[in-house]
Amino acid sequence: MNRITQLFHTKYPIIQAGMIWASGWRLASAVSNAGGLGLIGSGSMYPDVLQEHIRKCRQATSQPFGVNVPLLYPDIDRLMEIIMAEGVKIVFTSAGNPKTWTPVLKEAGITVVHVVSSSTFALKSEAAGVDAVVAEGFEAGGHNGREETTSMVLIPAVCEKVKIPVIAAGGIGSGRAMAAAFALGAEGVQVGSRFVATPEASSHDNFKQAVIQAGEGDTVLSLKKVTPVRLIRNPFYESVKAAEDRGADTAELLALLGKGRAKKGMFEGRLEEGELEIGQVSALIHEIKPAAAVVREIWEEFRDTCGRLGELIINSSSPPTSSPPSA
Image 1 (cartoon, rainbow, N blue to C red):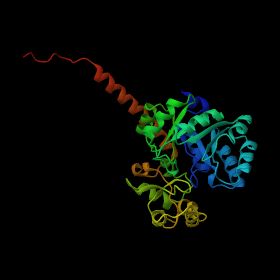
Image 2 (image 1 turned 90 degrees about the vertical axis):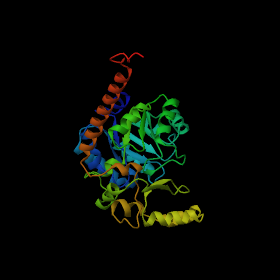
Image 3 (image 1 turned 30 degrees about the horizontal axis):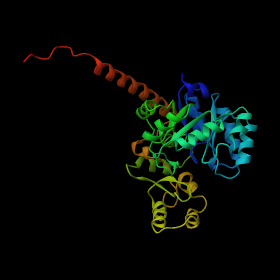
Image 4 (image 1 turned 60 degrees about the vertical axis):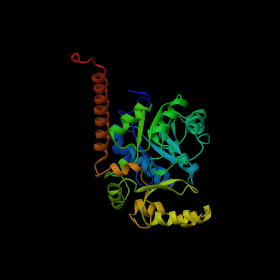
């Protein structure tokens, strides 16, 4: 056990990200049942839909689960009321000021984690009273930080600044990546894109196929004037890029974005005209497999990698077996 498994009462320090249009009760409960921490993604849910997902998740698992709440979305007051009324014990917040809701949630006995993209925001989150932070690097999908700091730099930077546990995110979809994150100081990992390519994810099969077919360089961070988001290159992305290249202002980009672009792409599978949000690690995802298999493979590969590195250190520090030939 470490501070993350103790904090969440889970078997493994593996957290499934609360992604919009992908992280419903089926995915969250499957991950929790497998020993990780499943999160319901409330960013694409109306209040009554969130309530339904919380109740179904509780019926589907006896293990801990939580809810991710992007603070920039509407109906935040109502979402938080439902979360507290339903007795949810873990909340991950993102895309907003942690000072706004952390004291309220903590007063209700809820464990609070905030997602950050810099050590500055990590310190502010710690000061706000959160129990842990997610350090999410530039590689991540969906909403992203404007700083464009990669996970390799961000994770140790955050670990140096805060005393609370750090969960690494951004580019993590395997046990090898998890081992790298732990080497940098993290005590847990949050995995998003890898869980999109599972049968339990609520996203459309067309989107899942686009994820496993994506290669290196097929995702781009865009819409920085609105809210930075990493997208798969498609006709919608090209229209966004053309607008940004000619200097479009925020109003024009918002008009181009319109309503329901993310739903069209990720939930309805309209790949030409919708937003396709996913991380760079999609280039390393080649098949759709059950969420429980993903959790198991990440953990087993993590242990194997740590063992291999330990053997490498021992072998490297061992004295030579024989003396070099004399001159």
